[in-house]
Length: 233
Image (cartoon, rainbow, N blue to C red):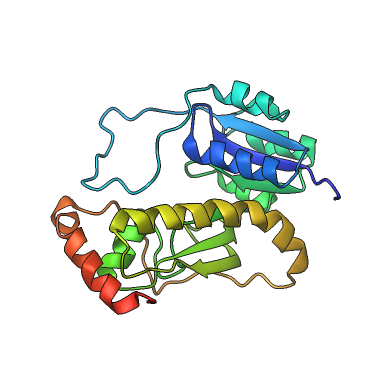
């Protein structure tokens, strides 16, 4: 296979999604991968949801060591220096495995690939899975090129997450996460086959914040109603 140069943006701390993405890239046979690690800032009072729905436990190995164990390259970076590093290294694909909001200059200069755990533009913002269930809209995953508008940019691919009659909230959350990783890794093969990347910009759907506890308290009841509406067996 022709070997593209792939840049992976992440945090400089053990990170579950990053580890899963590196596993996927290695399984696909990609060799020219470089990880750019941004500083991780621990919040003083991190948000604690009632229902944790994102896999969070990472293997306790430093990112540089983890990267090197895959025979991939590693470099620390900052939001101020990343743009020049990517320009110098001339990556063919830049994917986000873990990062907060990126500087406008960066997303305007590079085609940066992201996966969003929601069916854009209907479920923009935080806690998209929970809000989709509460609002009764399709649970999905969207791969897109990011731009300066949150959870917008340009569409690469979308997939619905199937829901079955014997599902729990957490089994659906895990399925969504697995599809998210798969789509992010597969986007490197998919993008060269596409000719059109529709805009996801919208004023119809607002980006959501973290789900308030008062709404999250009844999430399991909402999920049972959602399952009755959307289950496929």
